[in-house]
Every structure is written in C-alpha cells, then in structure tokens.
Length: 320
Image 1 (cartoon, helix red, strand yellow):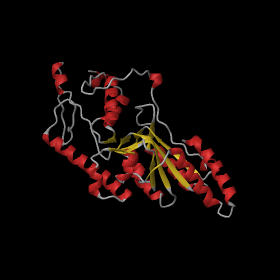
Image 2 (cartoon, helix red, strand yellow):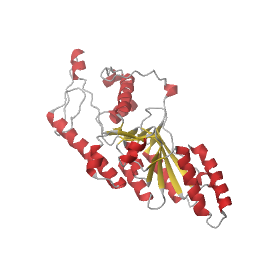
Image 3 (cartoon, rainbow, N blue to C red):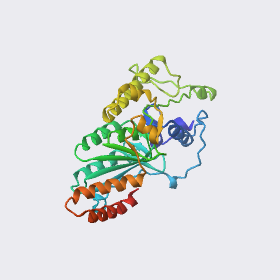
Image 4 (cartoon, rainbow, N blue to C red):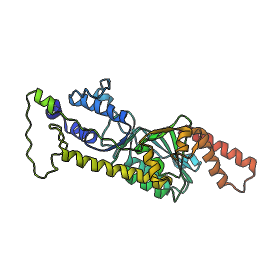
C-alpha cells in the first residue's frame, strides 16, 4: 500500500500532523485535510465525503508569513493578519492555499509591541482554527501584550476554534453581523486500516516495549485502554480551551462549556459573551485610527483632528 511503502518522509510528517493529534479546528476543514492526505498517500478514505481536485507539485500551497507594517504608515495602528489554517511553524506543513503559523504571528506581535510608533494592535481574523501545539502559548503572549498596548480582534470573517482562542486573548473582539466566532471544542481523527489490510492479505506485526507505545496504530483496531488514554487527552485540552476562554473573556465556566463548540454570528456572539460589539470591519478600523489620532493630538483643534483621523483611516483601508 502507498500509505506504508510509497510515502515520503514529508508525507509521513503530514500524516502525523493530521491523525491522532487533537485539533482546534472546524470539523469540515479537518475532513477536507484528511481526504486530501488520503489522496496524497494513495489511500481511499471513503468515510470522508469530500472530493478534491488534483494538485500538481508546482501548485503546492505555502504558508503565509505575518507582515507588520511599521506603525501602519504612521497611523499608530499595526494590523496583523490571521488568515487560513493555523500551524505551529511556517515550514511544518503546506495543507492549503492560506495558512498562518503561531511562530510568525508571535514575531509580528513582538515587533508591534516593541515599536514605539504603534499605539494600538489589530489582529484581523479569517480562520477556521488549526493546531493545538503552540496555540495556548501564543494566546498567553497576546494576553500579556494587551497589558502593554490595546489589542483588538477584528473578525473578518471568522475566528473559530484555535483562532477564537487567540481572539479571546485580545482586549476586545469586534465582528460584523455576518461574521462568526466560537467552536470552543477539540477534535481528533484516527484511521483504522486493519480491515483494508486484511482484505489485501497483509498482516502487520509490531514489536514494542511500553504499554502505550503502539496506541493508535492504524493497522489495528483501537483497544479500550487506548480509547481511555485519548479521552483523557481530549478532556485535558478541552479543559484548557474552556478555561482560557473563561479567564480571557471573564465568563462563567459553565457558560463557555454550554456553547458545546457551537458557532455564533453577529449579535448572537455578543449575547453569548463571545464578542464585544457588532461593527463593520472598515468602520471598526476607522474608529480605532480616529481614537489613536485623537490621543496623539489632544491639543490640536477639532477640525484638524477630524482631518487627521480621516486621513489615517483611509491609509488603513488597504490593510483589510
């Protein structure tokens, strides 16, 4: 089978990233990733009802690197884009056309915090979530940074699961009436190829030491002990996620868990405590730019302040 014999080291690493790992991501995005990986590995994952076009090597997607404009052209507002699937490192895996790494986002955040010309930081979100590894650490860094400078999460147009964890660590969350947040939950995939191997007349024998060493092996059905270990792991990450949102957003633990990983849009997100206000994206950035301009020029006559604020807002428009 190509899954075991023909795969390259990069493909093995890809499988490791997708299977048997907890994810903070929307289920449909994980389904799509699994289906794509199956095609790359030469495995028929018929249980995933997703059809993907073939992709040539030249069309391999690449991770995007978060870019921070120097004080956003003098406006005092730095916009950091959080677009696509979230991965720990830029070079880890290229799954889709748009993705961002926690590593690059942290670098962008640190640069914005250190830049004396930046008075306000904006994270612009459009992400279904992604990897667990590295997400909680970056969220903690964002939470610490907001004590130094205000940080606004503008949801443009989604901040789900891992992306919502990052957004929840910001000072404020703003979304439009059609944008969504939430999916406070954890998901994991395991593929059992034992029946397919048996049908192909292939018997796999694994020698190992340590009772947990062969847990989640794809060539054998899951044992009850392995399921129990996975359940403990999932409970742990779910507890971390719900606990972080509870702390960052000032919510009750039972209210966060009561969302049951649901998706909330517009005013419903504000009502659930998962966001702070409904406001169009450009209007939000205009307001932030105006507030920064007003703080910079308190001694400037009002007409001049309005002119400065309008000019800064216009310069920020290209960031969204």
